[in-house]
Image (cartoon, rainbow, N blue to C red):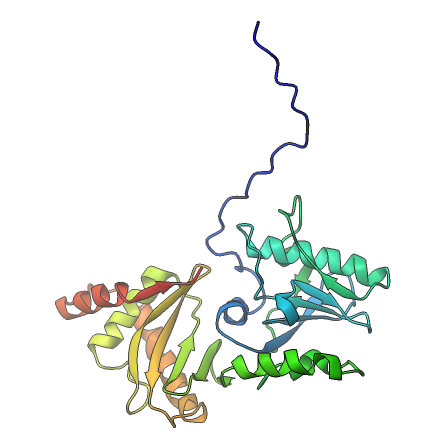
Length: 284
């Protein structure tokens, strides 16, 4: 007679279905993606639907912590973390829910997420508002802004600051970030449009020579992150963020016109589209 399987224990957890565009529906979706993938040191206040608890979305927290409850009771929610359970918006919702409970209990400290969150809300379920007010910092000094005893953390802060490349958010368009990596400058611009439509529009502009933002700039390709594309331009060293403001606003107008153009692509435009499709790097 065959032996019965008497193994007992908790049912094995299954990973949730992959979500191609996890941050859709969040305030300033494109900036949320930038804070997760592109911006070294950035913050943005979040408004909760059913609470006046202070919550700040942060690109990176000390030790890549998922969240922190500060001594003041404020909650800092980290975007650049080590865990990934298939839907980062659900991960963030689970961490935020844990952090709110910890804050209400008066327990400051790190809030972690070590296993798959079951029945957790998504971040979209917990926050409200249409846009985020993003602040890009020169470094991570904001980590210690509300800390009196800073000496013990000075070494870790110096190390983090040394790794933070200069970055600035353009003010005239959404989710466009200039950065200087020393040998080169870049503009990386997360855009909300569907991928196929955006590729076609960019191909029209590329074929027409309308994708050169400033002298010396070169459109080099795109990142694909969380269901959206982020076109990237190489810039000459010394360009700076201010010089991009007017050209970026003008380019956005050209892009909107190209997106509205439903005519067939010319041979040159089709060739440009194929070339752009081959110059994509998937981040997430």
